[in-house]
Amino acid sequence: MSEIGHGGREIVERILDPRTTGERIKGLKKVPVREQIAVEVIDIAYGFFSPLQGFLGKKDVQSVCKKMRLADGTIWSIPIVFDLSDKEIADYGVKEGESILLTYKDSPIAVFDVEEIYEYNKQEMAKDVYGTNEEKHPGVKLTYQYKDKFVGGKITMVSKPTINEPFTEFLVTPLEMRKKIREKGWVRTVAHQTRNVPHTGHEWLMKGSWLSAYGELPVEKMMVGVIVNAIIGEKRPGDYIDEAIVLCHDVLRKAGYFREDVHLTSISLWDMRYAGPREAVFHAALRANLGITHHMFGRDHAGVGTYYGPYDAHRIFDQFDSNELNIKPVRVLEWWYCPVCAEVTYMGLCNHKDKVQNFSGTLIRSIIQDGVKPPRLIFRPEVFDLIEECANKYGMGSAYVTKDYLANRNPVFTFPKL
Amino acid sequence: MTETFPINIWINEERYQKLQEAGLSAMAQEMLAGLKVLRVPTTAEQRDDILKKYPTAKYDSATTKSIELLPRDAKDRIFSLIVDRKTLDVIEEFLK
Image 1: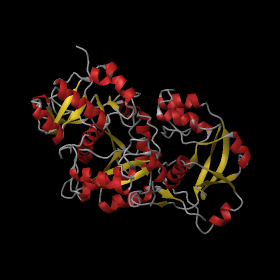
Image 2: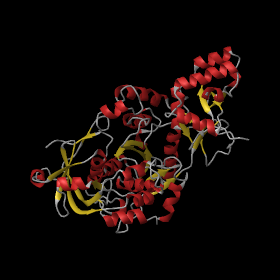
Image 3: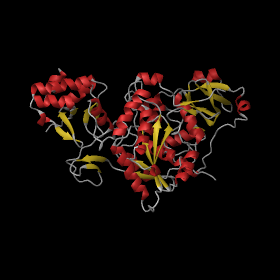
Image 4: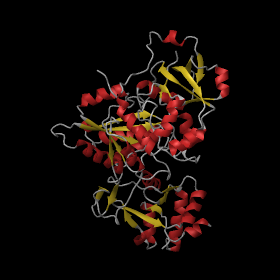
């Protein structure tokens, strides 16, 4: 049975047959890559980035930057590129028309069939994708760090990486997710994109968008699921540690705030670009590949600072025909605490605008830092307790990213040595 | 009226006791379903000074429009000034 993903294309995993691996990689020039590239190899190979089969060539990069589409017209908003310095190209003997073997931490990870080596103006790329050339924008900074040349071509992963605990059960590939959705009997699913430990505002975003996606479906048996898809990738000091994010989301279901038959926790590997509306489009493609039917977009989705308007990520979807995306955007406003309503309530419903009290993950962190336990209406006690547990078990004493954590954490994935 | 940007000093048991002893418990506002907080006003200039002086602090421009994540000892100093001076207008002195 064909599994169709973003762009109406079949999801095809690009992984070598173990019976032919030895022969396929014999004699290939080895090129070591950094973690970001290793992550994107995994994403391409498993179909998270379908219809991409490798790193983009110049024509596709130009089209993505200028038109938010691949050269063949498929919607695609963030260029997925492989960069090398001129010295590396010379030292490793990378040539068009030849294959190389990408390695990560001395393990072979992918055969890269080099089709094209090219230059691309990084200032232009940054401006097109992020709408700014300011280097304090993390996506712009990442772009300016790209090396001299880009290399386009298809990749085939050498062998499947081990996903280490506690992430093992949460990395669900596109083909596996479709199986899970069928097993659960979900007719619709709504993605909740996150890189934070949940407070009740997040919980209500999920519940509200679940209700929205549920619509007219019958209710004798629950037919819709929330799929939390936490982005696991590059961390900055002060972020919550990845383990806390994933496990705290999962505890919301285990503690009964979501029924077992309406909620699932998963992760995707990706270094956030904070491209705001463009990243919203990218997320839509990613979750369409996971077989998810709806994607919730809130205020300032995937934004940073004040680069993007609060609802730019809603409006960007207006330019696409509904049949071009295999996923429906669910546009949501904010949830806040209203002392008159005496509950966490929705901006689109509550009219006590002068009385409402906004809360955020940052505010809650301040509350905890001041030695105060937030009330359960704002922050679930099970999440509060689990944060401390994660701090001790995974975070070297802190639930927030520190230099110690970055240097000594257990890696999310490991490729086998051959 | 000049816009102000609050620093939230969340009141734990120890702080509440000190406020009560100083006769200042009415200064604390109630927020978020039962939490007590002192909302200490800062001007835009003071806000920027604080963020420069304490790089781990953050101005939550997106949601709460408040200065958050000031280190605990900085907040303790601000709280002590409030109790001593019996006013929330202590930031100028705090920044000296």
